[in-house]
Length: 234
Image (tube, rainbow, N blue to C red):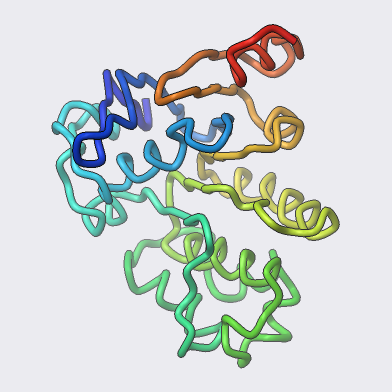
């Protein structure tokens, strides 16, 4: 198994955010994690990437405990994050923002500057522009490209469609199959249930820090998703 969490818990001070969360991600798989605001989705991503430290055995990468490792060590293992809000470096150009991703983890693989530009051609045109001078959708493309530059085995995407126009969301989601073709697994945190179900092999639904549903999209009903998402029947 590429990644798994076992009885993962997380707290913010005295406030409990995750309660015994178990997930698994196989190599090359696309996993969607859905849930309303406050469900614990982003906390789960922060726990996997070392932003929140846990007991070592609560997060496993290829069977090895990594729950207590710092973020830099997690990235070196091939787990890259596209954070909510994009978080580009305002003082750097598009190309400089992309190149930083490759410096954080120097690994051979399919992703290079040219490969990212082929995935998102508009970034080649804007490569000398300040990263934060782009539209929200183009900034999201930079954030995805920056993560890909580390040639990850696992790409974590936290709310990559949030606040973007439908036409831009379509372009970003169209890039995901190409990312999977490169060999990377994807964990997609998403509030848009339809988008998540359309691209995922499996879906986890979370509510109030707990997993309430695990299913293959083709095998789950709208009513089951609604109940798991909101805690009430449709």
